Length: 194
Figure 1 (cartoon, helix red, strand yellow):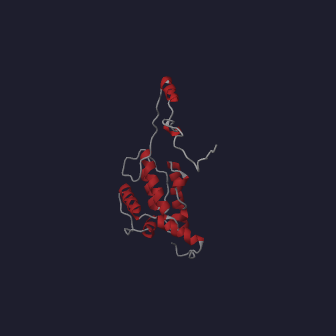
Figure 2 (tube, helix red, strand yellow; figure 1 turned 45 degrees about the horizontal axis):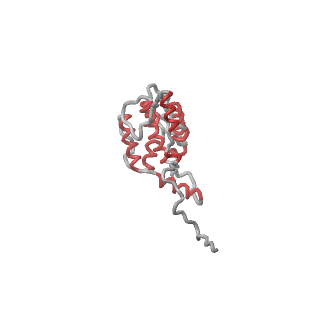
Figure 3 (tube, helix red, strand yellow; figure 1 turned 90 degrees about the horizontal axis):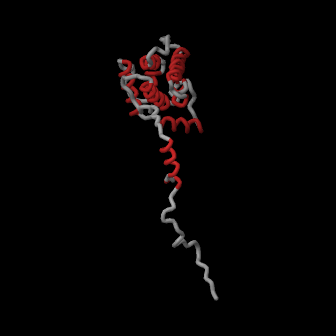
């Protein structure tokens, strides 16, 4: 975490522990290898761990170059190379906006503070996996990680086939074969005396 933030306590500390527990080092390694393969260069910090990964991506330059490499035409025209905090956060924001243009959903993205202040690095990893998946769908033929997004698979049925489908009772609705109340005893039997 960043040194300028106060130590969390109470509920905030519990939430941060859960976020830290979600972080997967194996997924980070896959992201590192993927970024290096796409950009054709090594990341500056080769140590594994969320703080080291955050230091690689914190200035946003690698992320901006990554999305430009994945898209057919560059989505980010000017990448800030200055080391001032607001310029680095601006790079991260440019990356996030480019991801939205590229086709990522809001739920797949992270907040700027998640990366810049190392608040939720697991969400950063999720965003990189989603970026890879969407890039495949957008036509990028290079290396990828994660799942491949499905494409549409339209089917056409004749009117006769549709009518035959209406006559079938699906097993989701249950079946009545062999149904009877034989052998059903609930509670005590009633004794009838004459």
